[in-house]
Amino acid sequence: MKKKFKLEDLDCANCAAKMEDAIKKIHGVNDANVSFMAQKMTIEAEDERFDEIMEEVVAVCAKVEPDCKILR
Image (cartoon, rainbow, N blue to C red; front, side):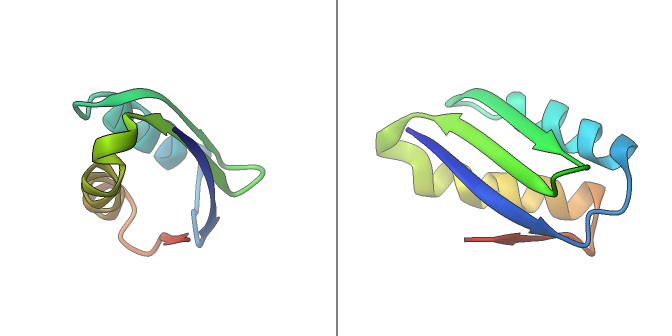
C-alpha cells in the first residue's frame, strides 16, 4: 500500500532526510520519501501492517522533529 501525507512544521531539509532514513529502516516499509520543499511524505509499506507501521513512523518522526505533525 502506498499513501501520501501532508506534513506541518517540518523545519529543515536535513531533518526530512533523517526522517526518511529512519522510516526506511522500519520493518515492513518498502519505500519512503520525505520532501521538505513540498512538506509531504510518501510511505509504501505492507498492507496488513500499515496502521502499526504508521505508529512507528509517527514515533520516529517525533524523535527527529518534535514539532512536525503528520496530517492524515
